[in-house]
Length: 84
Image 1 (cartoon, rainbow, N blue to C red):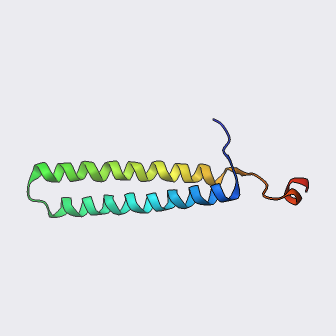
Image 2: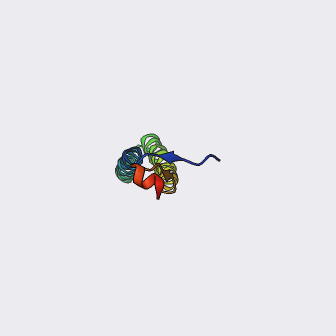
Image 3: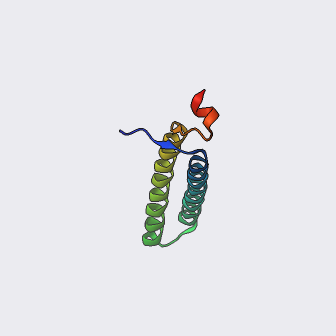
């Protein structure tokens, strides 16, 4: 696996975007699970359960990406940081 190297701004933007995506997919999964609990039609209930499962998987993938971003090396922003 390659090491991820980002500038400070890129690191912040990527982490922020992934954090928002985790929140969004988690909320969608919760909503689908809520719909499953209130569905009477088995076919729709199964569909919503599958959508919830996929959103949970996306959430986990994003959390792995966040871990990668958090472990990324950051490029020095200034000459002082480069020299010492």
